[in-house]
Each structure stands twice: as C-alpha cells, then as structure tokens.
Length: 283
Image (cartoon, rainbow, N blue to C red; front, side, top):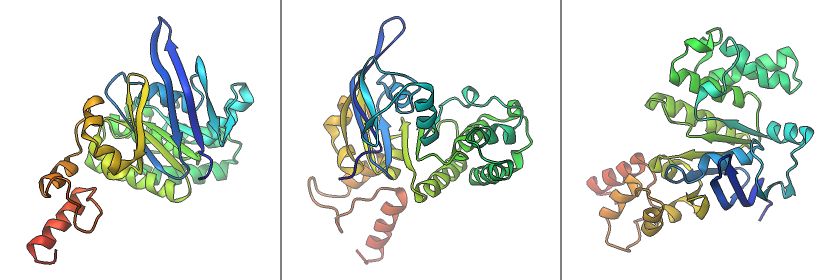
C-alpha cells in the first residue's frame, strides 16, 4: 500500500482554558480518495482539520506528510499550505479582499504565478463554482451561499494536492451542493485528495470513498464507507443516524441477506433504478 499523503498520529490538543479537543487522535488520508469525517458536535472534527494543514500544532503526536514529519517553521508551513488547502465553515473567516476576483486571485498570486496565469486559475475556479458573474462583486454584498462558493473558489484556484473542507455543504441549497460536488469531482479527477467534515450522514454515504467516525476527541473507526456506516452499534455510539438509503435498503431485504448483484445502492438514484427494475420484471 502506498504511503498516505497525510497521517495524523496520536494527536493531543487542548485549547486555552484547558478544554481538551483531541485525545490521541489518529487519521490516515489516502491519496486520491474522498474521506468524510463524521461525528457529533464537539467530537473534534474541526480541530483535527486545523491540524491537517498546520493551523494548529499538537501538544503531543505528529502529522506526517508523505511519510515525513511536518515542520512548523515559516518555510515548512508555507510549503505545507501550498499542498493542503483549507476551506473554513464560515466564509466570512476566509474572505478579506474588496471583490470576489481579488479574493480568489490572492492565493495564486501569492504562489508566485504571473498575472495572466493567476487570471486563468481565477476564471477556472469561478466557472467551476458557477459564480463567474460575481467576479467584480464586493464580497460584503454576497449572500451566504455566494460567500461559501467564493471561499471555496479561492482555495480551488491554488490547485492544492489535498483539499480540506469544514462542513462544505452547510448553508448551500440543493443546486449549490450539486455544483460544489461537481467542482470537487473535477478536482479529484486531476489527482487531488478530498477531506471533509460533515453532519450529513447521507452525503457521506453517497459520496465518500472512506469515512472516519470520531467521538470525544478520538477516532472510533476509519474504513470504507458502506462497511463502516452499516455498523449500527458504531453509529449509535457516535450519536449518528443510519443513512436513509441504507435504512430503506435494509427494509427491502431479509436480515443478513446479500443485496441482489452484491453492491448496495448508495444514492436515491441507485435505489430507484433497482425498484424500477423490479417493477418491470428485469430484476
């Protein structure tokens, strides 16, 4: 098996005032995969993400990048954040320039790209998030959903190897979620690795390759999505609901019986296609 692109080993972290957020946290980020972090509020998801791009430094433990311990001096952090982009949950924490174009161009220009090259990156990122028409709009006049997409575009424009997103779909309508997923899929097709935290178990079940279940600052389990989220006892311990599609799938089969064809449906479209086949006598 290839070396993980990121590897968190035994991370412990306490915020000022003595509030411990991570308690020996471990996590393996496999290259080219979509990894969802799931857990209830206060389980350590955001704190873990902030360690994965060097924003926070653990009290104990270490983060490895391509198998090598990460450094925290200025040069090492600059190189680290050039490879690992972070999109915060609240876009107002990330947007600071006067216009959308200026904000999205900040990262590429800071990477040393020429104006024409940076412009190409900016226009590509704005188009990917379907906000090209907002390029000249003042950032303070954007809606929440527009701010969210502008913040993501600013990180996409830097072409990171790993893109980390904290609750990326929060505040987005259905169309915005669809556009975001399409943009992230294109980024992954270029070789990027995606890590995202979410409260949406259905999103993780339908879209993630792997999931990590967190609880009280520790990793409860990490593994392939369907097998991990099919563990009802694990989900109960983590105070998570069973994915809706999995609940419906289980209702349509005998307990413990294999699903026809062997591959459990992951989306409503998958399940609908199966039911249509049953109705038409194909299955």
